[in-house]
Length: 472
Image 1 (tube, one colour):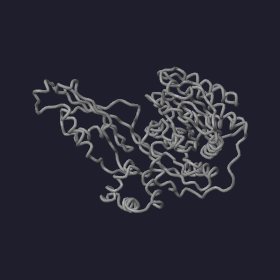
Image 2 (cartoon, one colour):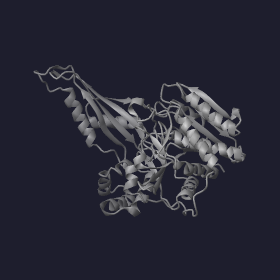
Image 3 (cartoon, one colour):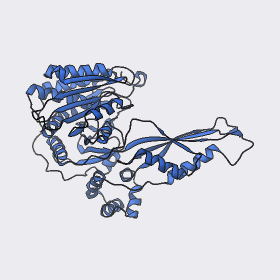
Image 4 (spheres, rainbow, N blue to C red):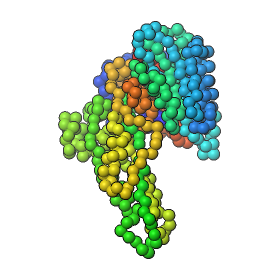
């Protein structure tokens, strides 16, 4: 579920303040790092081959795809015993260990997911699972989410092995097989590697290009809200519509939804959101700039909070939000409703228990006949990761090598990635995708998903730089 392909869950906010920056180091100078043509060709081949595996839920192709990735690494010099593919539920995990020279150092994790969302051939212009190279793009399901970065990471580590690179700490690839659905494999990996130093996620973060192809901003994801759905249900005896009573399931539910819709959860902040507001301030003007300035000075400033709460670019950075997304009720046009059901979708501020939000919804609904139950998902609550100086410096160096001076923006996304499970187990996790794209090229989970071939060299250089710096 690529919250970065590209910056999907917060791209409107970034466009609104596209030149935001964080003081994390001086821009690198010089030309872009050169990438060997053979490495480029191999990375493109891995991406195309990756797309051809129909790794959707239930298709059973994740293990076969994992075996292919293993073959790439073994051919580059990995010992077969350093790569493990383990069946999990109806999918699999892929773990490859690049051994370091200092066994006392905690390992560096590199995570991503091998599965993709479903795509129907009749809906697409091209077969979604036959990679097509056309007009400077690679088309196919998963090309962006998440097989681009999985391919770039694999190609980079294969190349480093061929070169004889010796990291100080172990570098462990840990690819999940059901990130788009139940995240059972993700939870297994997060438990298996809860002693890691940190995790780099290729399924989050990334760069935004303007429609003219110029770099706009790079987003580094260091936190994400917890996704939760709640079902609200009211049941009544019903009856003939010619005999209306004061008890009506639809009316009861509507009243509860109205109260919930008017409720605002308490304002919260963390290091990540503070950095986000601080970064946005220099490029803002008018009431929004004044509100951000006042909020940073006093996080209890009611007027500033009210102004920011009315702005879609900022409300999600302030608090937990819950909104009605679906409703159904009644069984006949001439009968009193026996049942009415609604879905409330919540994006929960990091560190807030899901049960606490459910309890609040019940209090706000203020009707004991409105039953509130959680819809089971793969999401778990997790605190945001600290903005570590070593991570910020490594990412800044890598991004600036390709795009000198480009703004690096820390972000808390509203989407869901594997990172949440690692964060929940105490492993700081950061979305640092190497993919740069235009917003108009963003089709993750949609029709005709694609990535620009021109992003390959930059992504390879990006991962090479970040891995070398953080595996020390």
